[in-house]
Length: 356
Image (cartoon, rainbow, N blue to C red; front, side, top):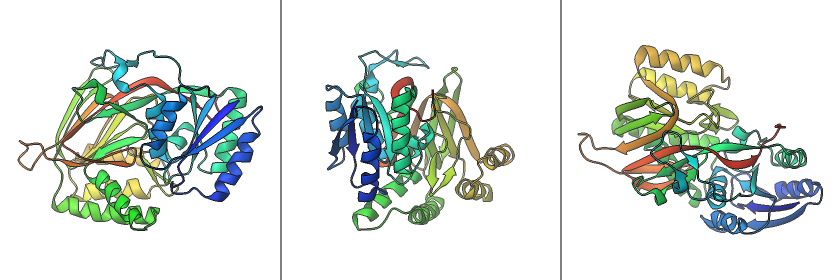
């Protein structure tokens, strides 16, 4: 069994001790032959994964966070622009041969996609789950998201696995990247502090987002002038430490994309919803409270099972496009005036813990 490890040595929770515990565990797989490659710069994991598709590997094991996983997915799979009938509400990946199976040892700060698939956040236990899954054939196909700043050009689409956002959440990602370059640690407390600061700036000068979408059943929706909007492929949206932040509870990886937004940042109801999302460690409390806020105050906006979502940033008058920070899978993508997101079902083959 040939296993290729693609490891990000700069991921948040990786350590020499973690690596020492992972390798012996993976070697316990029958006939395991392991090669490890370390990434050296943004985009390197994607290049390694793309090269791996021309070689014979039984599994590609991502050792890193959501950003590393996202890069590897973009290297393993043909570009999303190869979808058949892109104007259909339910496009599928055009068959272009098989790709190696993906497995994940999570060593990032949130590890949302790995947890959504069923991996333990503990690297050693995740390695054990990979061996168990390879031995038992516990694999599955999952859907993914695709995104582009210029959706009129099919070749511009890229894959994403977790979430994307334009405005406040992307500003937090950008500012954290800058802080890490200055030596700061990307701790949950630091993320929370930056989130509060960004929220306050947003109250004073809110973004103006136009959101349009189409559900997989063909139903359409439009919301104008939202100060906050995020597109999710996973539930939860993210984690703060061990606590899930669940914007669209109950969503599965095969349930299309989900939109979550707020119509105002200033009202007490918006603050209450945001605080509930951040502090709730009991997932069952969130849906009821979110539904109550949305029904009685019309503050929370939720739309599930989306085939497509278009987000545009406009100026205060709503007439002209105005660039805002954009993040995809927790990675800052620069500023953008618009972005389109699509759901592509059954496109990634992955080792799925606990599945038989």
